[in-house]
Image (cartoon, rainbow, N blue to C red; front, side, top):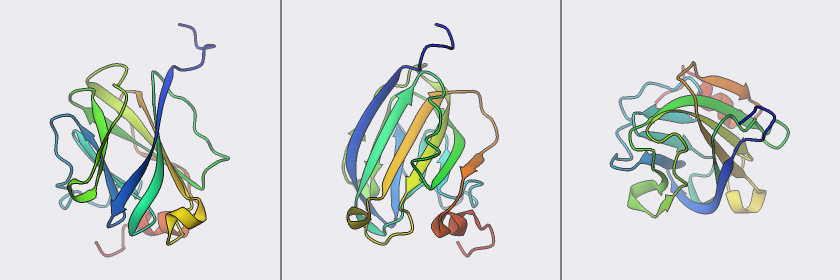
Length: 173
């Protein structure tokens, strides 16, 4: 494979019911939750533990549109289509992930990770996070996942007041 070829990408679109402005990316055999002891994350809207990630969304509750793209290498950020974009490394023990709704709601299986168990990069794109009701405002959440060695978390783009709130390490937890 040459670098001129586009990355192989498997996309899944879904509507996810959220509560407490949360949904979870969970590895097979791992639990969603246990994030109380995780300090304020460096990218604000994702808290990561081995095998699970807490994803913050704008609405307190209700349905949100989510797209997840699993790629064999960096699929490039959509800088023009989203207001906020952050990245963080993630460890997958099994290579099989799902998006899980808060409080034991539905589980949305995702395509298998291309390199199996290992270290991946999560790039979380957010549009419309400042709005109270997702369905009326067209907010959208787009998560890209690809294999990559661990590196420092990064904020690629930050324009919403909601992301600024979550990035503020002085805010009450």
